[in-house]
Length: 365
Image (tube, rainbow, N blue to C red; front, side, top):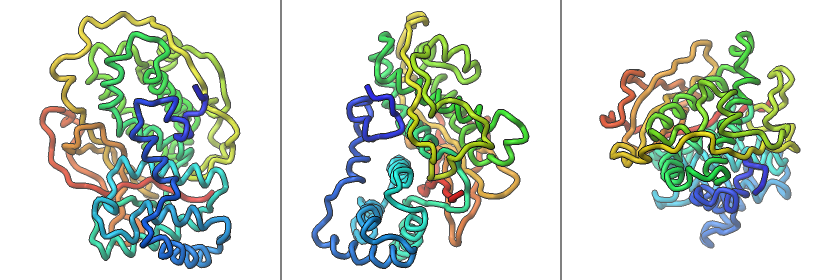
């Protein structure tokens, strides 16, 4: 098993239970085009790259793939209407390419500017938004936490079948996501004076914690096999014992971090790999009737550059834990907060929602 959870290209083998994610990632990275559109994408990207002062020879391939993945020329709603889970995989794909210096932030920003124009013409309310003026630190890791939230029903079902084995891919995946949360929270949000500087990142982490806590509550007795974030240091040692220490998950002071938004400058390090013990007792009952229901929660919207951030909840009937969302309305940005309070975290009474616009922030340091 690979040590690197940050590269979804490894998931096909490492985390086969999330085949839907790795297949979508491969689709985004493929060279397949509708023959009717290939030349159109080529011409479009020549213009985009020149206008963003990019390198046509170096950046054209990724630009064409991105505009195709966004369904720019497609007239099929099944292609250009993108769901939250698709957007989160797309963001991960984008950030990894920026990280590998295969594309620049200027070209990506110009691609989305052009995309916004055509989506308005199509009156498409299901799209991927991409802010360049909201700073998210270590965005690749944040997208992985969002992908975790998108796939909690699959993770739950896999845990039911694999909970006893200490080295199952599913339990490894859960532990690595918890390790990512801990490392980022320790780095950016543990010192009060740093929270203001990293408020958007800390809010994303707070929203993941809320979703993860709800997930643990929903899986009932199985929660004894995965760490609690409320006692994270002790539980990681017991349920995710340390095997290797790698730089990617080693906490460091945020002031010295070079990983901001889509650009992670320290990229040679790999994630901390951990094995597992069966220290927890077997649950008396793995699944009751409530656990067979799909999981739904809400995690609200992430504010932009304002000094006051709201943490509110709203439900969708999506049947799964919903990741933090950002919504673009009209102009450049609009902080969009969803109503319905924390007291409404009830999983049998879903409030109806029709918010289909998602994004993750990006700004070059």
